[in-house]
Length: 180
Image (cartoon, rainbow, N blue to C red):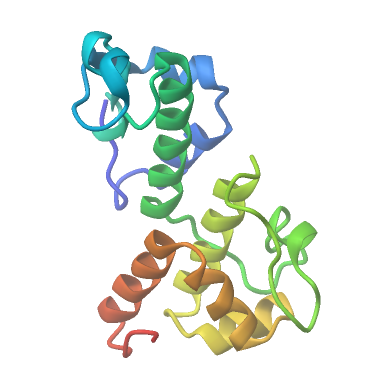
């Protein structure tokens, strides 16, 4: 079973809620020797990890640590972020339920405050992207929906280069100029 953002984004986004073990069960896992700095141990052990998520065809790689276990957990986090960046869900802009997770990290009238390392980060990023998509990539309207400032959203986006690039791709598809 594979997903596309057009065919079944709800099922794909449900993957964000799976625990690490459930996500790993859906993956082909490759371990290999990574080249580069790290001393002799790095060149002698298979510590690098590549996850091939079969349902979505996404590939997440982590090879920066000498520990296979640490690299595997990093690859799972990266897989979650790829899912969050790729799959959009429809949002009812009139609902009081908008951004349930993101709301916990919003400082009303200001910005979003959450670390990329926080386990809620993929959910916050996905909800923000859903809202931005729902308003045709107009950041000022997304800010109004969330009760934030436009500059607060833009500064949050700039902290994560992939999130920033995703929004700029979205803006391009809607005929808007890229954010700077």
